[in-house]
Image (cartoon, rainbow, N blue to C red; front, top):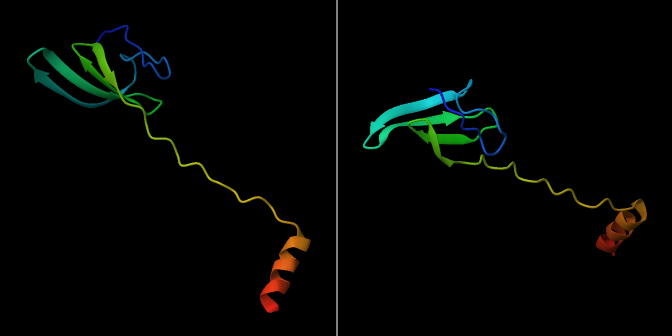
Length: 81
């Protein structure tokens, strides 16, 4: 496939080194599903980009704020009383 279409997420050319998921004939020509190096899936009809997915983000980890030793000791003492 020769096309000047690039991935809107990372700018990588859609015609170079993309993993082809599948290609099928459709009424408008051929539809191709290609996975970009950045993880997005590009949907192309006859080499023209018609849609793109964005890979899910990794869930952000929330780290609890550190507590001082004094605070932890007070909490422990309250439980004992």
